[in-house]
Image (cartoon, rainbow, N blue to C red; front, side):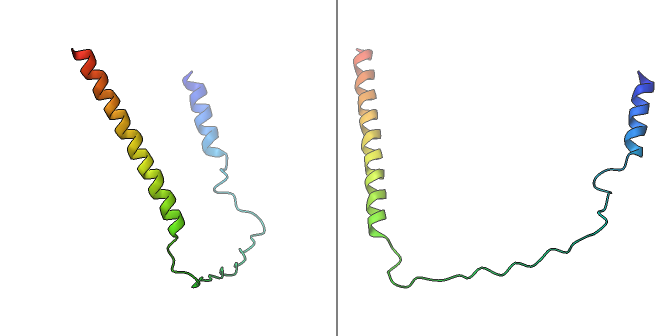
Amino acid sequence: MKAIAAGVASAALLVPTAASARPADVVAPTARPAPVVTTDDSGSGFDWGAAAVGAGAAGGLVLIAAGGFAGAYRFRARVAR
C-alpha cells in the first residue's frame, strides 16, 4: 500500500500542471471602450408613485402582524383560563 502511495505521489510531482503550461502564442487582451453615462434631469428624481406603493405595502404588513399578535394574545388568554 505504501508503494502505491509513493508511486502516485511521485507521478503527481513529475506530471506538469496546467498552471505551469504556457500557450505557444499569447494574444494580448483588447481594450474595450468605456461605457457612456447619461443623466436624466427631466424630473425631481423622486418617484412618488413608487413611494406610495412601498408605504402601502409596509402598512399592510404592519396590519397583518398586529392582527396576528392580537389573535395569538386572545388564544393564549382563552387557553390559560
